[in-house]
Image 1 (spheres, chains in turn cyan, purple):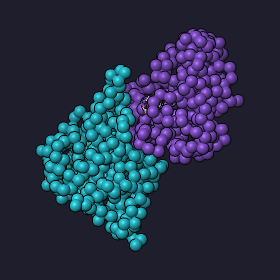
Image 2: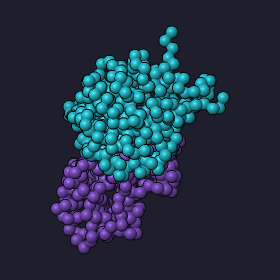
Image 3: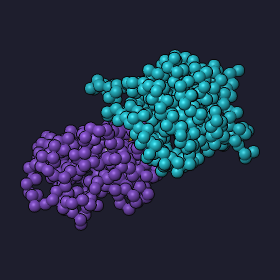
Image 4: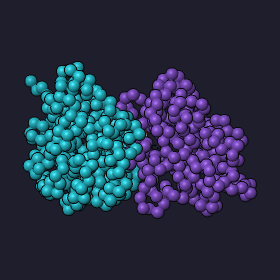
Length: 306
Length: 252
Ligand SMILES: Cc1cc2nc3c(=O)[nH]c(=O)nc-3n(C[C@H](O)[C@H](O)[C@H](O)COP(=O)(O)OP(=O)(O)OC[C@H]3O[C@@H](n4cnc5c(N)ncnc54)[C@H](O)[C@@H]3O)c2cc1C
Ligand SMILES: Cc1cc2nc3c(=O)[nH]c(=O)nc-3n(C[C@H](O)[C@H](O)[C@H](O)COP(=O)(O)O)c2cc1C
Ligand code: FES
C-alpha cells in the first residue's frame, strides 16, 4: 500500500496534505523559504493583513514561558497595498497554496480587504482573524462576541466565493457556539485555536515582561487546551476544523486529527525548526503506512471513547 | 542561512562565568561575517523552547566560536556542553558590520560581553585599517583578553585600567586620533550604546552599533525583535535589518 492519500478538501479548497503553516509564524513566505520547500506544504497562511499598514507594538514584544512563549506583536504588517505589490509576486513564484489571513477593526474593513484580494487568482482561501488578543481595536472584541462573529462571517461570505475559514479565539466559553455561528453564516471551516491570553512579570522590577502587559500564549504549553477545543467543536458542530496549538512533531499532528481536525497548522515550531512542516508530512505518511490508513482524512475524529 | 548540527570542539570558562564555545560548523564558518549572529538550540527538549542568539566571536577554518556568560537557564545549559556534544545552530544571521565605507581608523568600543564580535572584526580589518580598542568591564575578574593586542581598558571599580566607563576612557584618548578618519564600532549593554550614540553624534564620528533584543526566530518571521526607527515611522527588525545599525538610524 504505497498510495497513501494525504490530500484533504476544505470547502472548494483541495490541499495536497493537511499540514499548513500558521499566520504570524511564516511572515509572507520569503524568509522561511530558505529553510523549507513551501511547494510541498499543504498551504501557508499569511501574517494577518489589514487594510492599512500597522507598525505594531513597541518592544518588548515576546518572552519565553514554560514550554511556550507570549507575544504581543500587535498585528504589525505591511498593509494590503504593499502586500499585493511587493509580497504577492514572490508568493506566486513559490507555487504554494496561499491562504490570506485578514485582520480588521470593522466589518467594512474586512469586506473591503476581501473584495480587493479576491481578484487575485493565487489566493485560494481566506482566514478571518476575529481573535487577535493583542490589539486594542477589534480582535478580541469580535472574537468574544458571537453576534459579531455571525455578522462578520455573513458579510465576508457575501464578498467572496473563495473558501472561508474563521479563526476562533480560545479566550471564550463554549467555543463550539462560535463554530456553529460561523457554519450557519456560510464559513467552510474554522481554525482553532488562536493564542491564549497570558502574562508574565519580572520579580525584581515587578514590571510585566512584555510592554503590552498581556500577550498571546503559544507553543507546546497550549496543546492540551487546543486539543480540548478542537474536540469540543467536533462533537457539537459538523464543520471542518483546522487544528492549531503547540504542534511540534508528527505525533502532535496525529493527535489533532484524532481529536477532530481535518488539517493542522504549525506556528511557534517554525521559529525553532523551520523545516518541521516537511518532517511532519513525511511522518504522517509513515504513520498511515504502518497503520493501514489509505486516506488521511479517515483519521479525522477517529477518537475511541469506549 | 543554514541549520547545522555542530560538534563541540571546546567550551572553556575563560573568566568568571564567561565561556568560549568553539564548534565545528563548516558551512556557517564559510559564510559568517563579523557582526552576524547565530541562533542556537541549547537543548533537544522544550526547556528552553526557543533558540538563543549569540554573536559570532571568531572563525578559524571550519570552526566557529561564541563568547557568552551565564545569565539564565539557556546559557547555563550551554555552559555545560562538552567536547563532542552536538548543538543545532542556525546561522549566520543578520547583516554584520559595514567595512568598505570611508574610514582609516576603526575604533572598537565594547562593554562586558560586547567584546564578542570583535575578534572576527579585527581579523577582517587586518592589513586594511588601523584599529584602536577600548574595552570596559565591571571588575578585573570579568576581563576577557582573547587574542587582542594592546587594548585600552576601563573597569567600574578601577581594579584594572582606568576607573570609570569605557566612554570616559575613549573620551580621554580621542584627541590622539585627530589625524584619522574614524569609525566607531560599538557593542555592549543598551545604556552604553545609548551613551555612545550621543557621544558619536556630538563628536560627529561615524558609528555603527550592534543592538540586542529578545528574539524568537532570528530570521524575520516572528516580528518579535523591533527597534524604533529614528524618524519614528515604525520599527526595524533587529534580527533581519540589524543587529548592526548605523548609530543614528535607531532609537534605543
Ligand atoms: C543579536 C544578539 C547577539 C547576542 N550575542 C551574545 C553574545 O555574543 N554573548 C552573550 O553572552 N550574549 C549574547 N546575546 C544575549 C543572549 O542571547 C542572551 O544572554 C541569552 O538569550 C540568554 O538566555 P538564557 O536562557 O540564559 O536567559 P533567560 O533569562 O532564561 O532567557 C532570556 C530570554 O529573554 C530573552 N531576552 C530578553 N531580553 C533580552 C535581551 N535584551 N537580549 C537577549 N535576550 C533577551 C531571550 O530571547 C530569552 O528568551 C545576544 C543577543 C542578541 C539578540
Ligand atoms: C509571534 C506570533 C504572531 C502571530 N500572529 C498572528 C496573526 O497575525 N494572525 C493570526 O491569526 N494568528 C497569529 N498568531 C497565532 C498563530 O497563528 C497560532 O494560532 C498560535 O500561535 C497557536 O499555534 P502554535 O502554538 O503552534 O504557535 C501568531 C502567533 C505567534 C507566536
Ligand atoms: S527574531 Fe523573529 S523577526 Fe526577529
